[in-house]
Image (cartoon, rainbow, N blue to C red; front, side, top):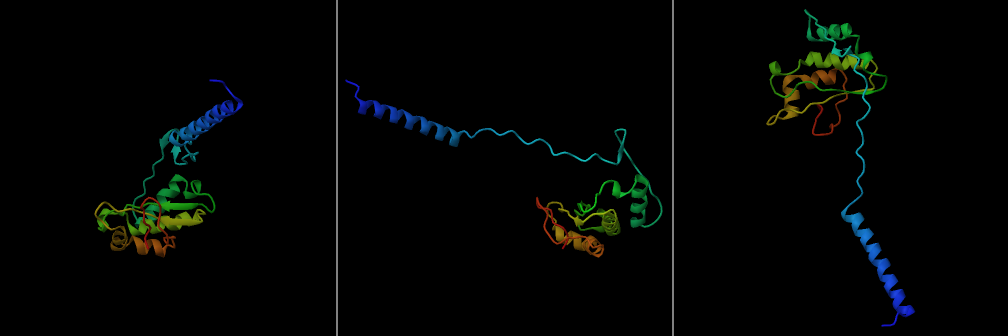
Length: 166
């Protein structure tokens, strides 16, 4: 069989089409691997000294006073919070029983101290244990009222199923 110009162009066109189809299918079936993004840069923990966590003990007084004195002994929240930052306080409100959760007074004082340290926004966020309704736990324990009284911004749902008190 004689190779004519027409036959050569048909073979060349077929080869180009086959190559293009291969590249297209390869990119669709086996997308290029992207490098995983590295971990975000973390702020150094200001409450660690020489690799050991700092601990403060406060005794005597109300929950709010105890939190304030303990944080003051550690150097205050302004070591951690920079002006205008969003702060999320995650209290333990996983159960609808006051004796099993963080004190509403402690939560309220933490919100106030965060604002005093320069926070632009404070969100109180929690997700109750399986079988408990988060909103019910917030209301039943008094954490919702305390957080709202302390002017925390609890008007939006947090990602990953966490629900601020409303």
